[in-house]
Length: 86
Image (cartoon, rainbow, N blue to C red; front, side, top):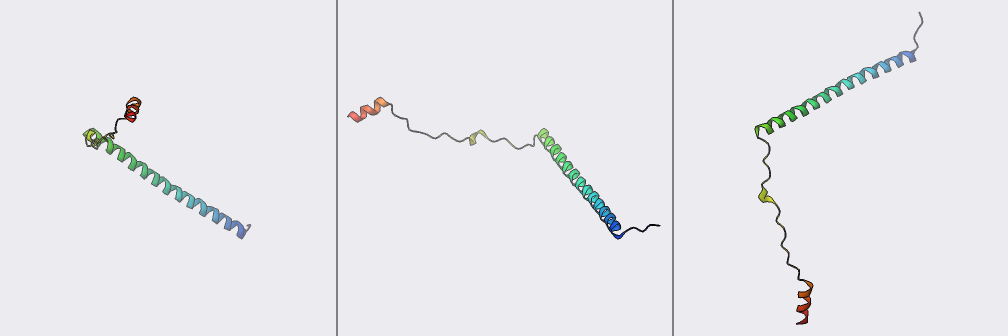
């Protein structure tokens, strides 16, 4: 029976540990992504139901519109020059 070298055994151990840890990390990532997608879908459904029930946010009132700034009327060129002559 041939004996395995120490380097071969160590390499196999390292590769096996890397594979198992990668699989564990992938499993955790899939669970997190699934939870996030589920939460987003639930929030979307709740928003649709609220809008159908009429519980959506009230629209802004039209009285809150910014008023235009009052400006003095500019004098025409004729009136301005006539005033200078006097």
